[in-house]
Length: 312
Length: 296
Ligand SMILES: Cc1ncc(C[n+]2csc(CCOP(=O)(O)OP(=O)(O)O)c2C)c(N)n1
Ligand code: SF4
Ligand code: SF4
Ligand code: SF4
Ligand SMILES: [Mg+2]
Image (cartoon, rainbow over all chains, first blue to last red; front, side, top):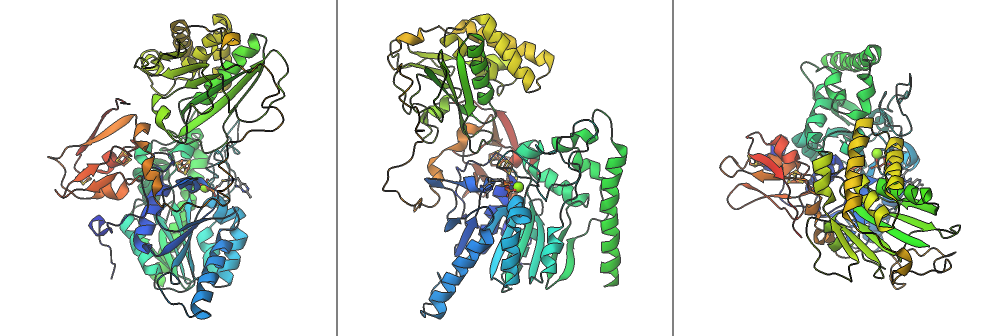
């Protein structure tokens, strides 16, 4: 059933041009590129302040589909306005061409999705807005210097959670945005990772079947903020999936299915060690208890998945 | 008042260089104001920093649009339309970090030095040029060597550079300081002595009034901005080993790999930023890397 079976099936068309000013090795660019390959030319992209905004620095833009820039908290509200405008043209003016049928996709960071834009997104989902909402989750406010967000994982260093003295870095847990969105009753919710490109392409493709809110959260490796080597972007994304820290799943009308179940979980430290934001867990002294706490949370998650997916 | 504007690429230490210069000016008894551009400071992307120094209290604020001295940390920026380092430059002193010798002389007011080469020699890294750039600016302004080196040590210590690395940076700073001439700032042609020229109203460069709404009609026009000069390492595909599997093509963040008619992957060096993701994902180890040699 899957339309994309391997990288050979990736569509050739490119809707993103080179020459943007995002950091070398940034996963947010890889996600946007593949998202647009599947959604295609007839897409209007909405973006708000955040790293991806610098794909478009006036008077230059790397994005080759219509691109509208809104306020930080208002991505989904802008999408509502565009969708409503197009629908009015079709329903009231009787216009029916490819343009009024354009897809609307909001492409924003975690600060926008989990925090400041959460209210407008929640409201749009509640109203059943027919749109795609794709969060590239680099787990902090990247564009302004990597401050803590509601998506920052436990123990991560950010510029507002410096691990000084006994501090562990970020002491809060990452919000479970997948579950929060699912609880709204959206028709399609999915997690994706750049390490699993065909899984990502197939999920974007599948989402096209549904009318209403289609929500994606993508782990977005951020070499600059995470303190990782640029060439490691894909390896780190893969480790996030294989350690079980970033589950790949989808929910269709609330029904959850994992699209990749690691047979044996790799130890979380293999992932944590690739990034300077977790270095204080290992140096100068190894924080055994904290590492175990992260490991146990992951194992507990997968224990519950195995129970429910085996039983269901 | 004298206005110094620093240009470089994110990650080169241009902001630190401007701080070193500001601190050196302070040690020389000047009032000093130093601050970086606010905006996206991506690794490799053009950045700028500004320093005003004056014997009188400085009341001006905002970006410097009419620099007396322009310090360029990366030669390729001279041709970058967004960085535009010569904007507003009135013919004071221009310094460029480059291994080449200048083709224009401007009565000896163009100074060059290969700080990147020196950084490689003294520190072992091409990206850590802040001490050299700061020291060059300090020498151009005619500050003493001891104040310059003190400023380097103070600023590097403040950002947490370990002791032995500071020593190497001091060596780089000293060699850079000794390699460039001093100028009598007071006699530069561009110097506007009044403090009142850019006082009060901040001169932010904006486009002409007729562009009321920021609309870009030419989609994908970043293609005229070549990001290829961000590269420090350059990926090279061995065509004998490439099977055309498309994996590197799939993962390149910057759309810089295309599949040729020969069925193999090719790199577009105009844009490749040198992240080396392609090299790390190639299952056939067909992509190796070499150090980039920049050509103008
Ligand atoms: C209302 C408002 N508050 C703050 C800002 C400043 N700001 C710009 S980008 C940004 C961070 C965005 O973080 P995120 O959404 O995670 O995207 P990222 O930068 O990580 O890609 C902030 C705080 C703003 N533009 N508007
Ligand atoms: S800071 Fe991170 S998310 Fe932002 S452009 Fe750089 S790598 Fe990408
Ligand atoms: S990944 Fe390697 S073998 Fe495959 S297309 Fe790229 S260079 Fe060729
Ligand atoms: S190094 Fe490879 S993956 Fe990175 S930008 Fe260049 S071609 Fe693309
Ligand atoms: Mg973010």
